[in-house]
Image (cartoon, rainbow, N blue to C red; front, side):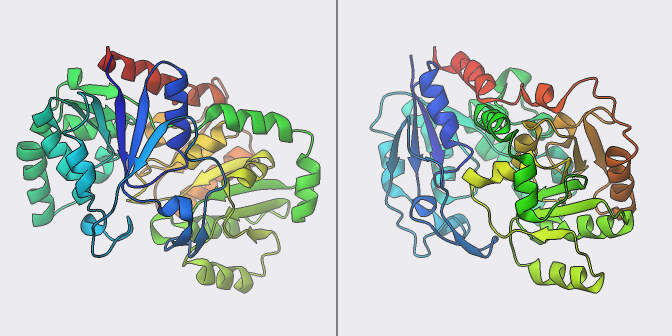
Length: 388
């Protein structure tokens, strides 16, 4: 039985619990990291604040950090921000394994994808690219990328691990056969979030009171960075158009659009909009527990949207923009939520009204039931087909 080695830029709060789960369920898993930035903490340029995750990122699996030889070392610094020569060399020292590389956007990652086959490893690519965003890209750079992927990189990959429908469509657009595409969905620790839901069920009124939210208010939740690609101002404008007194808007997160959002809040004298600032993983569940609908209003660049998975474990309705990578998979239109046209504030306003005040969702299938398939268990079961 082969081991599975995941190649990551740094320890990631969504991936580390999955590695622990895989080891506990018969898939011997280790991780190789190009950087320890998320462990030591530091300035997150998009959040605009110091970030150090407060859940265990290095427990339950073997891991190794490799020296970064880049002259501008950071996973925030583009292709040459991660240059881990000893990691590439180590590829030729270990027994034949299943190597899972998350994307090709760093020197280290691309090198392993190109060279791993030479040692006899089973090379797997797990990228996030959704087809609905890829088709919107034009120009010479895109033409070159498609040529390079189709003729140089993808022939050196054995299997393509798709995270969802749009991602599978991306691989299919390059002529990849279905037999080489394996469903390994983007997932969160469903078990942890559902336990938090149960634990917090008796504290909802107390949490709301602490935030100054009435027990009768409907709560709209946004969770993410206040940055352009996530379009938080669209949601703020939709809230203004909704114009409901018994409705609160929670923006969990932070980012460089905060001053613009604060100016709009002040201009309209909005008393029930809360900008929380950065909230760490151990506390974020409180905000899911008290909310009535979750909204992701993102545009191009939101390749999946894992906070949608988190919200669905609290069984709340979701409203997601049509460009967001997970919209096809996680939203059952009119059932557990709605997909709206990206950037269309009127459409978003209408969908908010239908969910919160018109009660138009059928709930033939719940958000919890939908997200059950997008789990570490599914990843484990499907990876086992590669290691035996």
